[in-house]
Length: 280
Length: 130
Image (cartoon, rainbow over all chains, first blue to last red; front, side):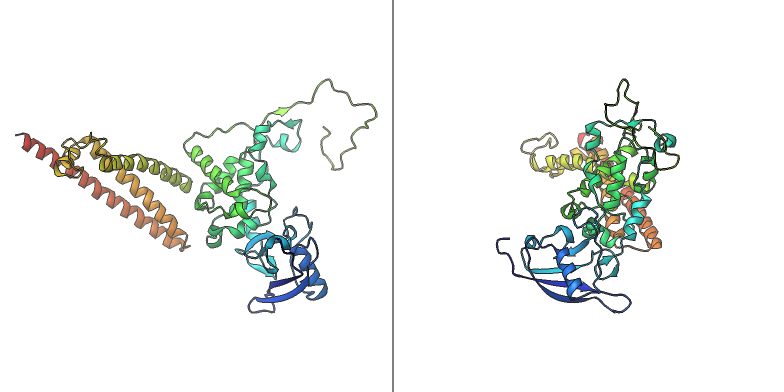
């Protein structure tokens, strides 16, 4: 933006389900300060004018994924959105669409996390003993890491879910975030949980309803490409149906390097703080 | 499992449609360049050319395969659109039944028509020869 505003107008959608029949808009005017983000503005409003205003936020640096909001018609992180990048001094702030509202700018993200949990978003291996008491490191090549790396940057903010036109109308569809995370683990060579996830993915909750609108990828504040993950997952499941998918064994376990000696002056690792944790 | 299976067949059907619809386009619109399927010359839909193709076993099979692929591909797409309206589970089952029975009925009808045209063209060709 070439013209820096002197004043910023915040229009915030307020809704208290215990007191309000319907949501209403509240307007606040603030002086612009250099580097001001939407979250900065909300904090100022809460401190000076509207102490009951509710939202979620934590890290203030686009890492925790708490402050996803619908800002000027697009799901964004409030902490990561500077006023100047909106190209207007009018800031419309509402809770993320496609979720019920707990209060004001706080969406109920539980349906998203329920779908996420159902798809086993973690490493699953048959050798459970090795998983929980590893005897070495799981080997992965750089190429294998690149298969899932970008998808692991997801911070579960829910912006992709709020932008998804299919999730807006279809309560059965798992949505971009859970599907991306399922794909993230499916292609992780340390993981052997494809069959467990397939129980859900091969059915109605899977990626089949995705229209490839691509909005999820456009709005992701971390640059993750959920639309790509969903298309790759479709291909993976088709290949699986045709028995053409290579189910590689989970990656090999690397033994301890032999012949290495601790450098002088480097002390031993501290004792494990968790009872029963193995000493590697 | 069902959606995984149906989606795979949906994609396979699209590949079949691409090939056979491509063949149809070539026959109908590139006749000046590739006239092999129009042995009598002239327009591809002239009676003699139509009969010539209709009495070919290859074309009869082609028509039936294209019909099956197009019906499955189209009806599965229609099912996807209808299911996005979030019908009740009972209505979903009803829609599935209607689409399967309707598709099967149309396939049988189309197959019968292809077979009849093959028989008719073959008979006419024989009569013409006699």
